Image 1 (cartoon, rainbow, N blue to C red):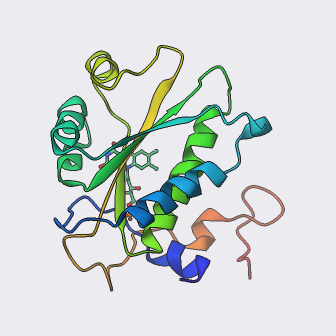
Image 2 (image 1 turned 30 degrees about the vertical axis):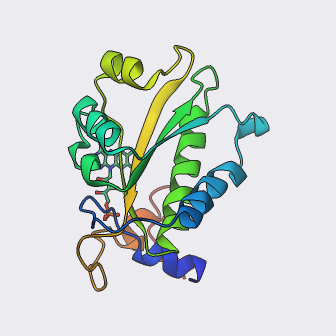
Image 3 (image 1 turned 30 degrees about the horizontal axis):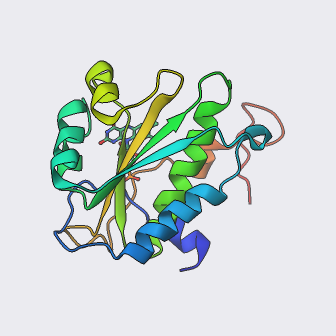
Length: 171
Ligand SMILES: Cc1cc2nc3c(=O)[nH]c(=O)nc-3n(C[C@H](O)[C@H](O)[C@H](O)COP(=O)(O)O)c2cc1C
């Protein structure tokens, strides 16, 4: 898929079919993560791949805003090191690259950030020095997404020209 088309059509998916995602696509998603740049090339992030149904259920129970992850085919917990003040930017970049790499192979994904931290850390063995910044669930969408529209503000509400407040339309 063309990169822009991939961005244009990607939506968050929270309902997944039971169809398995082939291991080569899963590997591609992880490769997309590995290839993403980090601030100062620190590569401080670590990823926990979860695909055991019981553990996906545990992940759902430990979440406060991602209960739907129980139905995912697999999930990736993104850990970043908060000693770097840019760690959440790194998390955002890797997250988006993984989501786009998946969507390029028709695999949908959704993310969540809210966890019951103590239980979550203990269940997944997360060391104190790393933050569980974001969790992404992947799987084939349960429903057809083609034709679904994104709810986004138009460019003329978002972009100023040369100086904040000048709303000349950018062409
Ligand atoms: C920083 C951030 C945090 C988010 N946290 C959650 C979350 O906790 N649970 C959830 O279901 N979706 C979460 N989302 C997904 C947003 O709800 C989603 O990006 C937004 O609704 C747009 O969805 P769309 O691309 O399908 O239109 C989060 C997204 C971002 C960027």
